[in-house]
Image 1: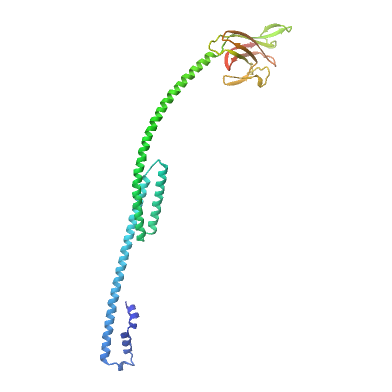
Image 2 (image 1 turned 60 degrees about the horizontal axis):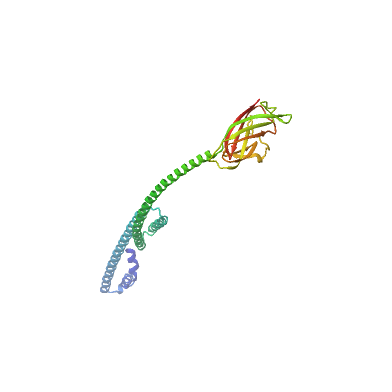
Length: 328
């Protein structure tokens, strides 16, 4: 205050007069009454200025207190808005739905809440922005209430659909089980029919032969003399088998595990029981569901060796029978 008085008082005319009156050279020229009157005026001015300074100081202090209160109120509102946003974010996070579109909307709202929280922290001393954020928070809360109703409806619908789906799945399982059982029974019947319709061979006999003087057929058990293997058998009658032209294949497995083949190339390959192999002889017949007796000759381009030969008969990929022949 002293500094202010020092700046203001020199500007007042009474103060100037007083200062001039205090100069040594002019003191004797001013009457005592005039000097006293001026001193009294100066004191009054100083008193008035002091009152004004006190009043201004009080108003400054009051304004400062008001500002502090406003700032404290703004901070309190900011804290309240932030707390509301945190609570609201938790509520949005608790909302779960299997609907992708609705879940995308919820994620968008959660991002909005995060942005509002950042703004609340940045503008925590701005009452206007805090008031706007509070209003937006309330709007988001009202929107959330409508989402809760929508999600509850969707969940109820999903539960109903789930129950209906489970019932349909169970019904489908039952029907599928019936279908599988019927297919199994059908397959069994087809296998029985297929098995029953396959041709079978009986009285299978195989022996080694050579030709004396190139004409007379002579049987032998000596491998070095054998020229051909004579296979004889009888195809049994089968009333459920399909009649018509059929091919009988004879497969010969040597003692060393090889297969005899007349040609040795792919023309002698046939399919049987899911596999492929070489046949050594083939005989075509016209089957009329009756019994047929056949004789078929097998040959070897490299001759025969001592040991046991396994001879198998096939028709339509199914085995008709087999015979083991041993040469010395």
